[in-house]
Figure 1 (cartoon, one colour):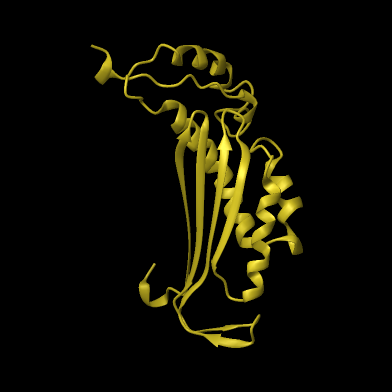
Figure 2: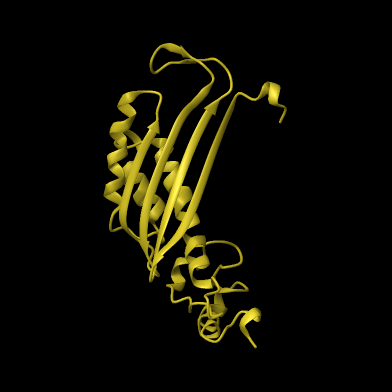
Length: 191
């Protein structure tokens, strides 16, 4: 894209951090930036180029069940002060598991006038990243060269995509993968 015609950019970044035994913290940030003068209908006024949204959501999850134990949101930059009121809805996610049906539950809890469309989109992106973060937790090479056994519920991944479909090339290997991980050591530590 040529910079001269660029009018808007949305960035979503998601970071996962190991915080303890079978625990991860996931933090997502959504930033919308306008590169042109705009008329903002919600405030019936013109705005200069710059940041329109910066929304940060933090969740602490338990593994292997991907259950949300803590959730908070910061509405750092919003176009209308009233938008900040939607940030508290994220606490209603506590106790949910990021498994099959999570997307529908998020839409029930946060959809429409109950929450913020941008925060909802961020959380849906975070759920996919949480799965990757949990894999990173299990497959990260520890100081002794070992990895953790991926003691997760296989139904979380089953039918999540083409290669993990029932009857597909990887679905039948779930139990085999769990067993194999108990004996896997990093090549740097196999002396």
